[in-house]
Amino acid sequence: MKLLIALGGNAMTGVDGGARPADQQGAIAVAMDAVARLIIDGHQVVLTHGNGPQVGNLLVKNELAASVVPPVPLDWCGAQTQATIGFVTACELERALGAHAADHPVSVIVTRTVVDATDSGFTHPTKPIGRYVSAHQAADMMRHGQVWEDRGERGWRRVVASPDPLEVLETPTIRRLVEGGHVVVAAGGGGIPVVRETEADQSGAGPVHGVEAVIDKDLTAALLAKSLDVDALIIATDVDAAAIGWGTPQQRSIGEVTVSQMRELVAAGHFGSGSMGPKVEAALRFVEAGGPRSIITSLERIGEAVQRQAGTSVVPDPS
Ligand code: ADP
Ligand code: MG
View 1 (cartoon, rainbow, N blue to C red):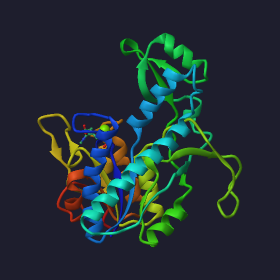
View 2 (cartoon, protein in one colour; view 1 turned 45 degrees about the horizontal axis):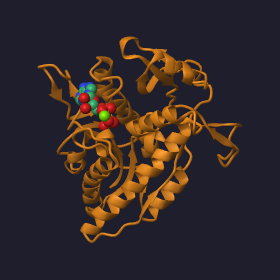
View 3 (spheres, rainbow, N blue to C red; view 1 turned 180 degrees about the vertical axis):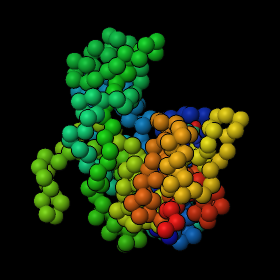
């Protein structure tokens, strides 16, 4: 099967939440062991990953060093984290494959995702990113043109646009690499957000530039999964399945559900808006666009989930 696997934050952070380079490398190594097993079983794999904590750390460095080194925009932070996480991922995946005497080329693609320049988030940003700072520090950054919000006792926090992903620009390249037998790491952090400067020409080309925004990595994964016609979108996080009644005594894991059943659970408010909600939405979008199956499960269970023995599966409504 052709699989697109979206790796969550726990694939890049130590078990104790540690984010030192060695912690991140160790977590990625564990994740790549699981991914390597799927590749050895004969599956074609495209990987995408989150970058929230890593971008958060770059923003802190930007703030602290602003008077010495000019701060870089959020799209540059996205590009930097794609490269770093992609580099470590490639090394660890090759190591894991090599341990099984398997040899597949691994390619990391710096990936841009087109968003709508007229998205309301650019005039009224709502997505909080980075750490809380004092009113004084926030005022400093606002002078650089950033938007910060007073969040009460915890301090001030930066807010940015979080537009919907419309198109992954490197899709044709990714497709060719997959066809050529490569394991591809792409669209990290949802892709670097860019807007078109003019209407795309007939070949889909035309100038773009980066914008200060964040894109939900799971929504981009769903879009890329559809463009590549994969057999399953797998969203690997830190819980074995999505659940109803999350955090209540009635909590119950969801197994296989149809799109309509899952839409009803969404409407009933079962999924956290900043956490499981976007994963469920991504799972739904892929299947609603014609994809055969989306799976939400933990990294440890991706092998079982592909064999339909674990996780939450979203499948099309019976026709
Ligand atoms: P990742 O970092 O892997 O992208 P998140 O931490 O954003 O993932 O989201 C996964 C988390 O969502 C789980 O650890 C859990 O705490 C939370 N969550 C919220 N609602 C649910 C639910 N209904 N079922 C399962 N997990 C849920
Ligand atoms: Mg998380």
